[in-house]
Amino acid sequence: MKSELLLRPVFHRLEHRLGAHVLICWLALLLTRVAERRCGQRWPRINRELSRLSQVTLAGPAGTVVHTTSLRPAQRAVYQALSIAPPARVSVFEPA
Image (tube, rainbow, N blue to C red; front, side, top):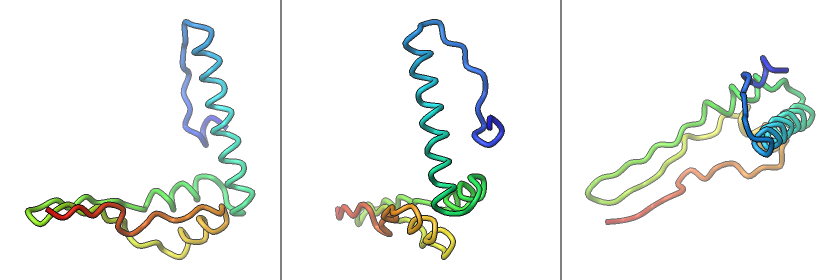
């Protein structure tokens, strides 16, 4: 499991930090398992597909625009399987 989630040993001195770390790791594992079961794919493939999305901020004298790359069919299938709304193509538009 550690190889899939790319975890490394973490040493905490305080008990509440150790408990929080364990809880976060457990939630991450739960999230990956839910995603794998709903998509029917292994986590590395889901992660690789979704990490190909990019967001670019274009700023100039006319204003600022934040633009997201268009979804590929495999990425759209992951979002649909997980019942998550895909990111908007234009998330910020601030004219000067």
